[in-house]
Image (tube, rainbow, N blue to C red; front, side, top):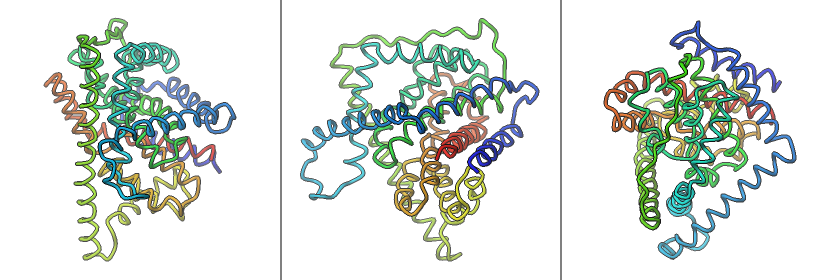
Length: 393
C-alpha cells in the first residue's frame, strides 16, 4: 500500500503542476525522475538504515544541546518569569533563535558556511542537471532565512530572467532556515524535521522543473557569490544578535495575530454553521492528505492542519498539530510533520516579493505577477516531501 500511495501522492502533485506548467513541451522528465530517485534513496537511507538513523539522531541531539546552551542566556535575562514546571512558547521556542542566529553568523564570518554551500550546490547541480545558481541557492535556503538568503545572490537578481527567478523563489518558500530548525524540533519529532529539510531541496526543484521548465545558455549559468564588506568580529556578533531577535519578535507578532484571527473565524463559523473553520477546510484538504498516504479516518484532521499552515503559517499549524498528534497514527504524524516543515504560506509570498522588490523593483513586479503560482509550487513541493516519508513508515 505504501507504494500505491507514493504513486498517488506524486501523481497528484505532478498533474496539478502539469496543468499550470508554463511550457509543457519543455519538461525534462529524465531530470525529474533522477531527483525522485535521489529522494527515494535518501529517505530510505535516513529512515531505514542504522547509519541514517544515527545521523538523524546526532543532528537532533546537536540541536537539543544548542537549545540548552541558548537557555543559559535566556534564564539569565528572563529567569523567574516562568513558574516552576511551566513553559512559554516565546521563552522556550522562540528566544533560542537569537543564539542560533549568532552561531550561523560566526560560521558565515569564518567562511565555513559559504564553502559548504558553494561546493554542495555544485555537487547538487551535477545530480539534478539544474543550473549552478539554482543549485547554490537551493542549498543556501536550507541555511539562511528570508530575506537574508536573497542577499547571497544580490548581484544576479536584477539580471535573472523571470523563468529563473521563479525557480529560486520556489526554493526559498519550500525550504526552512537553519535558525528555525531548532524551534521546529521542539514541536515536531527531530527525525522528521531533518528529513524534511533534505527532501524539500529536491522537491522544490522537481516542481519548478514541471511548472517552469527551461534550458540554460552557458553564459547564463555563472555564479558570483556576493561578498559583504567584512566588519569587525564583535560587530558581526552584535548584528547577528539583533537579526535573531528581530526574527523572534516578528514570529511572535505573527503568531499573536494569526492565532487570534483563527479563533475569531472559528467562533463565527461555530455560531453560524455549528462547525469550526478548521473542520471545514479539513474536509477540503482531506482528499489530498489521503492521496499522500494518510489513513482516511484521520484525513480530515490532517487536512485541517495542512490547510491551517497554508492560510496562516507553519508555527500556527505546528501548535495546532501538537494538540492532536498523540491521537494520530505514526504514519499520519510523519506525513503531516514533513509537510509542515516549509515556508509555503500566503504570508511568505509577501516576504519573498518584498525581498526581491527591495533589490530590484522590476524583478519584484515579476514575482508579484506569479505570486499565486509560486505558492502553488511551494505547496506541491511539500506534498511531494510528505508523500516520500510515507513510503518508509
